Amino acid sequence: MSFLRTLHILCFLFCVGCNLQSNAQDTAHNTVDTNIIDSVHADSSQTTFDVKPTRYQLQKEEFTFVLYLISSELYDDALYTLNRLNTDSIANPNMQDSVNYYIGWIKYFKQDFHGAIASFSAVESSSIVIASSFYNSICYIQIDSLAKARHVLQNLDVSSDAKLDNLKILQLRGISLLERDFTSYDSLSLLSVERSFVTESEMNEMTNYADLMRSYKRKSPWIAGLLSAIVPGLGKFYAGYRGTPFGAMYMTIPLGAIAAESLIIAGVASLQFIALGALFGVFYVGNVWGSVLSVYAKEQEFYEELDHNIEFDLHTPVRRAFR
Image (cartoon, rainbow, N blue to C red):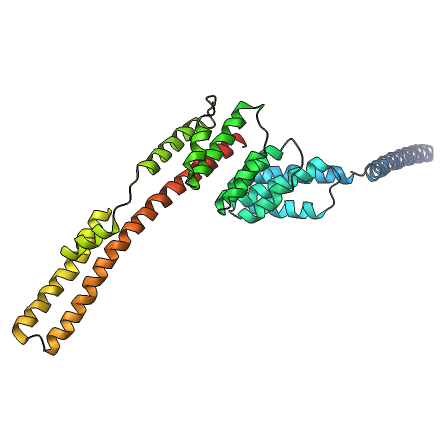
């Protein structure tokens, strides 16, 4: 019995020794694996630290982000990023020109035409200077600097590109119409142009605008005043207005009838007639004078509407050519 107990004890001690040895080996293996992982992380961290992106690469990534903002129509964010990028000294001249171009482009769409002109004028790269010049001319047109717009276009050589040459001729034709310079417009109309989807419809519209301007004849302000003196409001109808003449008629004629009635009843020296007669006189003279001025007002409205249409038809093909 003591022999069996002794044998059991020896077996138990043998098993315990084996387990201890196995645990020691596992611990050693885990320690080695941990050291390997730490070493890999350390090497990776060291590699990332060593390969630092250059300043140009950072600026290029930021400019790519700007293009994404513009494509997403986040113009305020794009302009903020471009201005921040522009304050940094950009070593690459092409990127500097691109930054100036897009700053001008966004300001143009935000209708900050003076700021757009400053940015477009700073572009020097031949690859985008043509687009900048066309946008510059449009901005000058919007601020009524037609001579500067013409100067920008005349100094632009696009004779090698038929599409852009048509666009240049279209812009110059539009400027001539805005200046009412039909001699210059006729000389530009003699230039042969090829059909182009960029400018074809707007070219036809310019011809229509020129015909409308030439055929427009201003009504006589003297006749307008005389007609309103005979029948209040008739002069404004002659000038081209259709609603306001009746308003003047409904105000002036009843007032004249009341003044005439007071003249018959109270007499010429009565305070009632004097007050009503003076009031009628003010409305009557104002109606006549307003009819005279309505001739000039109608002419101004006619040309303002045409000018607006011309400017719109000058914007559209530039945007179509340089998307």
